[in-house]
Length: 225
Image 1 (spheres, rainbow, N blue to C red):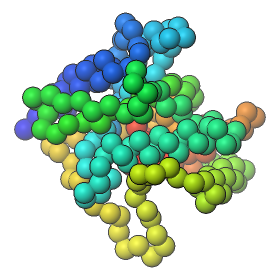
Image 2: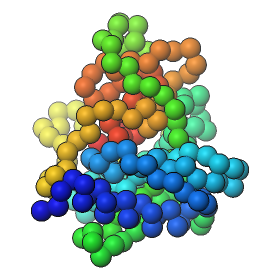
Image 3: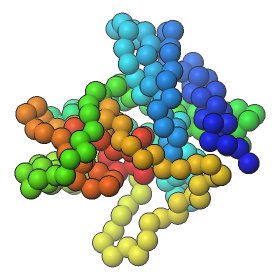
């Protein structure tokens, strides 16, 4: 049984290998969290100069039985790209590989399954711990409504794959059991959440979500568990 430290060490090895697929020179990795995704902050030299990124090593089989993880994660990033193009919501920007792909897949003899990895440009922010006020919840509802409106009108590209949650659904689709030593992160990572237009305040209205530059548990983006 691997300790949490050993698991993170193996994920870090995968992260370093994943960076070979990206146009990033002299990368410096800093561990963030090990939960649904294992996440690292990456400071590196991109084509436009020195910059900061978020690298996610994704948990396999997270999106349901018989679902291609690379396709599902790529679909998530397709929607983020569309949200950035079609709205003024400040959402993370996917960073493509040297070949122009949204994800890369890496393997290691120390990890049983191939892992899909993705990179996003870093988004600064802060986690608010104070109790929300009605105005904050109103702002959160407004942004959720804008997300729903966009999703209802957006034409997903061919091959788009995401879990569908329906009213009255008795339980979530298949979720793989956590391995020994794995646990859900207890703190939010501000750069990974959904961010709102300037002038709005941030708040965490519930244990799992937040309003204003929205801080979610590490690795989550717009409903990614």
